[in-house]
Image 1 (tube, one colour):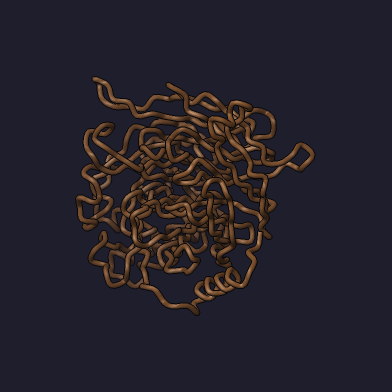
Image 2 (cartoon, rainbow, N blue to C red):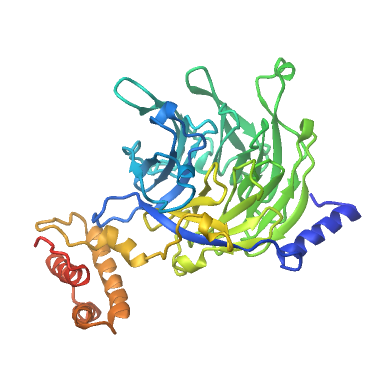
Length: 504
């Protein structure tokens, strides 16, 4: 749906000018890396991938002993939660943000794709896709306190039927914790799961397309404060749904109604996010741009209007997340892509900053673009990806760097070393060729990094260069190193670099 009239055209033109940098300049901002939390086992030789992260919205003493912060993450390793107390706010947003965290027991071992805390912070929904048949499942976990301490219990498991609900593209909570919205691939419906007295039990398939229409890949998102949601397709069609009132429900069993006024985008939609007040809808598109819509659903009188387009917002597989702090002065949204790039924009589209200075620009990992804003501190966000760490970032004004957590220089070599490059224990048996190949490939890659980094250093580092050169030469000649030889190389190199005595 395109906006009409001179006034709306003028508004779009002004917004476009701001995106292109022609409008009035606002306070410049910096996106700084400030810490990390490892999700995998140190020295395991396995680097996990994080597919989603979610900050707890209202962490309280009722469920965690005392008020603080919690963040959930899910991926190839399963699903786990990190908790810290006291809260980040109690630190006055200063110091080391990665201090004081405790990793909860792994609450699920199944490879996860989405995790979302409910608005109350009591429930955690985890979405995953079964490898056997690619059907999506939802586990809803509730934090319970008992005489023996707190823990999670599974409230409900939703198994998608065989009627085309393949995979999972989005997972969203309603503002009152009463509903979960799920969108999948190759389907004509989105699924709404309703919370009953003691469990999530009622499932409603909300129609997006007619039976004669082709199946589509869908995404959907609940409004942050009203009983409505928007669903969108890979073909660029968007639909608005609202909850029927009690009087209307007397004549039908279906709670959710389509306003029957779909509108179209000129590109497919891959992700959706409302701003904190629900006044703007931000859409990630298949052409790697972002489109922002002004959104109004007052008394179900739905009237979207196009605000602006942000071209070339990322390089691959975009995701969008808006700040959740409704009382904040600045309303921002973040765009993540499959190369771990994060860019920060105002909700009129203007780009403020990005993290390209702290990432590996050559990385390319589909679906590894997780980002989420802190629920109360609008300047803090977390990200996850292929590197096996929850990464913390602060988006701050360049003249207020003292009012945020200590920025750090990200060291990707040390991150790699955390998982794959400690000496292998004597007698370790590599059970599969895949694991052994992974160790050799990582070993070769990091020897190259050591050569480039240490070739001009002192005598001790020169010995490291000699070792790495010898190892690389043997590999380049096609020689296959045994696990014992790989271990010996790593042992000697680490002793030289860290001056640590490693048990042989």
